[in-house]
Structure formats: structure tokens, C-alpha cells
Length: 68
Image (cartoon, rainbow, N blue to C red; front, side, top):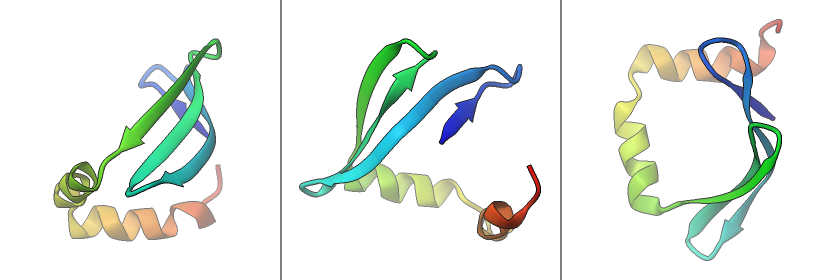
């Protein structure tokens, strides 16, 4: 999975998402060169869900089926 910046350039290539105890561990490369491991803690995941509105949730559900 790749994450792009506002200018369309690749910012991060995610190579794996896995469980690490009660956290979510995201591994990848930042800007194609620098390896990175990031942990998403349960409290931060709850905060992320608070940012989502109904329209955004519906969009996320249909995103995998859209043409890229």
C-alpha cells in the first residue's frame, strides 16, 4: 500500500500491518528510502474514529471498489 502527499508524490510505502500486543504495528519505507515502524495505540485509534463523519465512513467502505 502506498500513501501519497498532496502533490502526488509517494510519501510512504507500507509493507506490513500486524498486531503487537494491544497495539497495531505499521512497517514501511518513508520517501522510498528510510525504513520506519510506527505503533498505533488503542487510545489513538479511538481518537481517529472520532475524526470520522458518516459521509467519510461511507466513502471508506466504497473506496476499495472504486477505479484508481
